[in-house]
Image: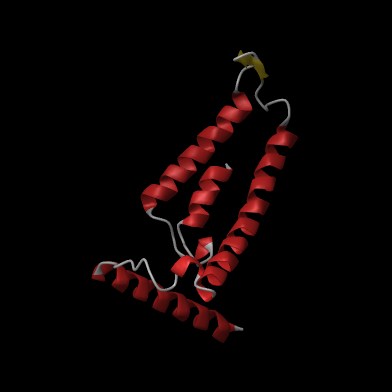
Amino acid sequence: ISDFLTLFCARTGPRPFFAVMPAKMLLAGGVFALTLSSILAIFWPNSSLDGIEIEGLQSNMGLFGFVWIFCLIFWFIQDALKIITVRLMRRFNFNDCATSGVIILPQSTLDMIKKMDEEALLNANAKVKHH
């Protein structure tokens, strides 16, 4: 669970994970992987792997829920710490990260980022006006 959540967090750089919608392929892959891993965790038969006893969580749904809640809570914490870390690294130019390693994005990507930022600003302004 935490691996895919980390991927959704890491892909947005200095922005919160919810600031940029993931690509449809990534979203579909994430939903598929998280659903399949959850189903396997619940219905895995009692067995032994390399001498280690393994059992599914069907008889312990509380543990299953705890793992999901734990991962979600720390996903939000991880995202907040990521944002703080990136801002500090840029502020103090850690390892010349603010002045080197220029990434040149294609014009289509720059246009898409600009459009998304404008839409987010319009949505934020529209919400404020309604209150």
